[in-house]
Image (cartoon, rainbow, N blue to C red; front, side, top):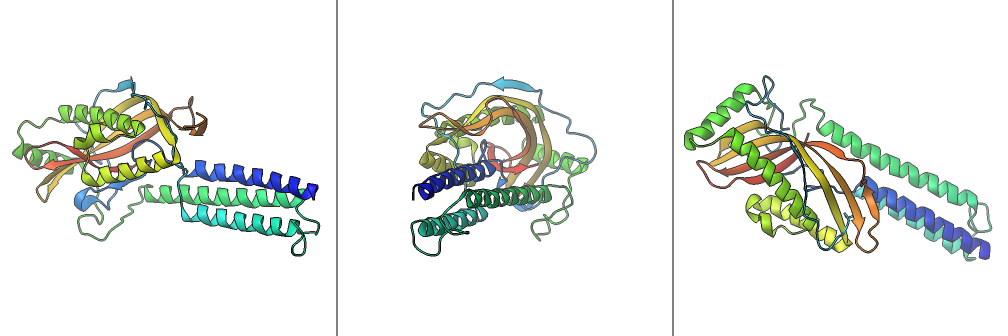
Length: 316
């Protein structure tokens, strides 16, 4: 009996570690949680791309790390859900329950009789690790195929199907915006995008969208708030430090349905990690290894003027 109880304790430890692996595999990160969200009008289902000829005439000068005000109450990211993770947890939980049931004298014993042994623990750990690798590899494959540049199209709308950005497309889009707003400046717009980027990341880490309500569309605000509510329930915080924006470049501009749209490519790096509020322990990410990323941020406003608002984030 003592041997069985010790084996069960070891098995519970193994499953706890596996649960940590699954949490790390699906952890969220920075504003938008490192995924594509929001709407880009008729181009929502086409992948944003930089112009195929020359770059945008203005690119924002790099800005080094700006401090982001830390939240007074710290918490890390949620573990994230997912069908495969739930299925794996249910499978392992069922196997654990069955083995505990048999180890207490009900049923026919362990795999070889006599309860749970080292072999069973190693076998379960191996199965759990294989499932973890499968989940991770499928996720990476899905992200790669979605943004590999092999002309993926996610909708059959005429505007989205087969769309590719060119220098002429960008110039024409910017010209249309200037026709209704002669004061529009690419330089000022890129500077504003950079400022908004820092403000949004700061509000995300503070888990408080009130200061940036005017910078977000209703759709983006709703998505951000759902993510923040999940963080608060899990008592975790996604910490962002030493943010440095290397470049902001306008890659698309167009008008439709009385709205201006401008998509920028943001290249930045930062320290991105998640800590547990109760213990302060880092549960995902790194406090020392910076993360480099490129994201497309699309902003919109009424044609002719008004405040620009973040409408979509797309992963490159």
